[in-house]
Length: 114
Length: 112
Image (cartoon, rainbow over all chains, first blue to last red):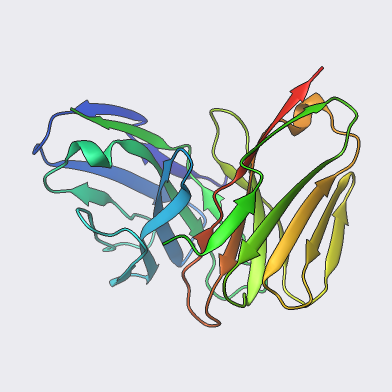
């Protein structure tokens, strides 16, 4: 089954404790992206990657890191989480050279930083 | 700041009534997409519009892209309980740039 998976689905952590949220897709998509969703603000892009070893900042990259060492994986790293990073996070992927840029989203990771 | 705005933020309708959400951008869009997110779920792609003035239909859903490619709308005819969720538009603000900017979303609730 074609899908985007994220782990963990739920995470409660404390300020300053480094964490990684994994994202993996099995559709051989070139493009992957991370979003955060907050009430009243919709989905805001954190980082995106157009292919292996190619990453770029989205609209809200501060406090986050990403890497793209393999095509299928795009982990999101919070080196020193803070309470304002409490949010619902979505990973998404799509093919790069398509007429219709349909993005496939993962199930989401709900992160709480205390 | 947010460059793609959606109105209304919330909409409550009686089952069977129509529903419309509007998306407005401060700059010209190369294309616009619409997504639906069910409560507790993830966004799911509905459609993409590319051409100025384009209109597309999916059963009871009608999508329009404005002539100036700065606004779009989604209209649902005769809503059903299965239409519950949040509807997002997402636009590519600069042609050739891969960033997709999402609107703030419209949450639709249906009164049975």
